[in-house]
Image: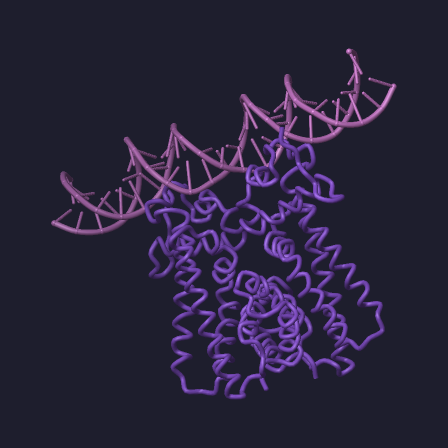
Length: 196
Length: 196
DNA sequence: TACCCCTCCTAACAACCGTTAGTTTTATTA
DNA sequence: TAATAAAACTAACGGTTGTTAGGAGGGGTA
């Protein structure tokens, strides 16, 4: 009889969530079926329900764990006593790192969070908005202190966050450039601009 | 008996595609059903098949018409005899305009093109790659002529294209900033950077 | 009026969906 | 080794999916 083999100290539920992240990333949440997932886990579909409550719980797990991760990071950055332009740089570096090393999860969250059902949908939506507001506040303070160009802060945040998600294409390409160089190029462009 | 009312000189098929764009944008391609769509069109699901061949044909229609639109634009820009930094600016302005005024289609294409089936999937993928290569070539020429900072051109293109897609969030927000101001802010950030 | 054709309808198909019930196998503990 | 708990299995549920078949309405032309 087939068994779920959990690598390392991961629970079986964690193993399922991990495989789900990969599947959802590849096919999208709605186009992924529990039978798809079961096949990848190496088990029958019904067996999954010994470990999880529903398909949607998987999405919740993915979304909220990622959100927590991002929140923890900005908690730390807010506390720091560094120039605001450096705080922005650190936020960017974190997003880039996540996009490089945890892109499956990040992409699923960004693309499929709308498929959460209430009340999780509203919860997540609020968390997302709050997170962006915190970054916006940092940018605005940077502007006030003349460290940052006088631009519309919410627009700047939108651009920063979405620009980074372009890295997903980098993953699928020939990767003529290293992850480190990629990171430096992105920072250079966003902080100093394209023009000379 | 209900009838499809086509606004203006649009064929009924065009009307269906338009409603489909909106529906796919809201729920995603996979989560949208033909019965959903039929309801919005004001007709029974089966009746749609007098005008279209399949659900996927709708996605094809949306993707390839958008692709053609973008290709036509870059055709024109390549022919122009203007500084390369200005060409880049024009490309950006076009993308921003599309994102503001045609965002439903743009978002559907960006998010759901992967659900195309062969051979359309490969076709579209190639078109996409070719389009990006053309922009990359412009950026590289701009670098060679010292109009653009010496950065990794493919990375710059990824950032440009994805940064603009952040505008989607602007649509749903309170819109404290006008479309024109939004456009100028984006260009300022991407061309001159965030830092002062 | 009689014809045709386009477009709508109802009904239904087979396939697939997420999920549950009930049972059997495997692992753990005593 | 026997008892218990955990986790797998098979079978099936009610519902939804995209799509097709066949018939009916209704406007245009002869």
